[in-house]
Image (cartoon, rainbow, N blue to C red; front, side):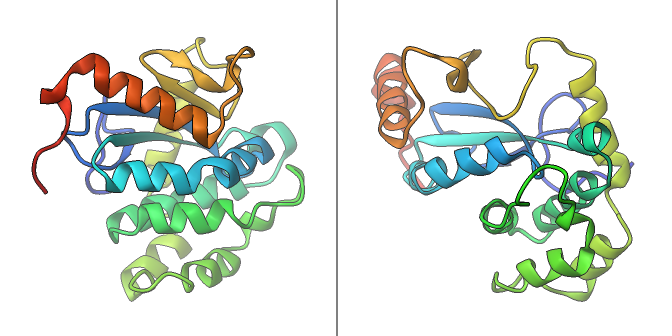
Length: 205
């Protein structure tokens, strides 16, 4: 198994975005072929990026690939491998945002199985396309890691659907009383920072 650089968590199966010392950590479960995940990203990604840039938020991603198993095809796995390759290139967040901005029309539409389509999307991101990146996408360099991420997910029972966004163990997506919006996320992050106290806020670059 070849894991992408900088992974964290048990077994090195999570891709982190944001400062290591950010006071608030979100755990996100997503599959590139999941329409609900694309909708969530459309709603929240700008706010998430801003909170990360402000040093308040760190996001740890479970890059899943189970939709292939449900509806057939291989786009989830191919896209997950490409996301891992983007992590190697230091452009995970940028490629993640572009990928989820171009979702399949429906789960059964397997556009991400086309590696040339993924490379075309990657071309929108300065500094991402390279011989190494293109080779990793074409050759499924991180396929073993992708399988391991999904295998870990399959062994647990707490999260049954994507997207899932966990803060302090609570799935914010499934809080029926408080729909998850950009405003709600900012409120929750600010509340968490306040609970942790001034020492929790990052003080340096």
